[in-house]
Length: 166
Ligand code: SF4
Image (cartoon, rainbow, N blue to C red):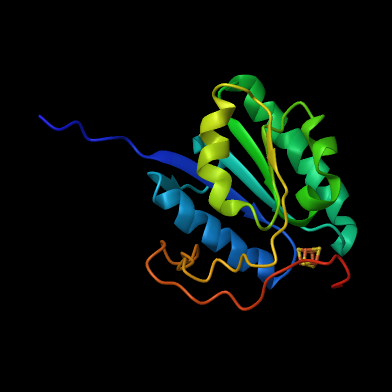
């Protein structure tokens, strides 16, 4: 008898501009291929990803505050994996890994590597990929819309973050 594999659940929180909204939808598309489904609260999640902005509205302070909230959940469920994506991940790199709650730091051009990073966390709880690429556009990945149960998609409009985009 074929065993039906249970879906893992990912909660994705997005800050910043339209690029990050599009990127989160690319990330969801990548993770759905790995048997993840989107959930709507951190309490349900096996994996929490926060896609960050580095400049807007004291964005970094807000994100550090959110990490404190994730820390409380992780106290209850130490197996919860927490990843920081996006512009703050790119700007702060290893510094973010010093935060006890953070398992994964992935920059805007590293999202194809997320399945590997998630697997690697099971062996070593701190993983990072913030390599930048001039070629990465995710053009072959259809972003999965988060506001409609993931049934439709739109095309990513631009890429790249130079942190001068307020
Ligand atoms: S730092 Fe700029 S590109 Fe990055 S999320 Fe914020 S506004 Fe968007």
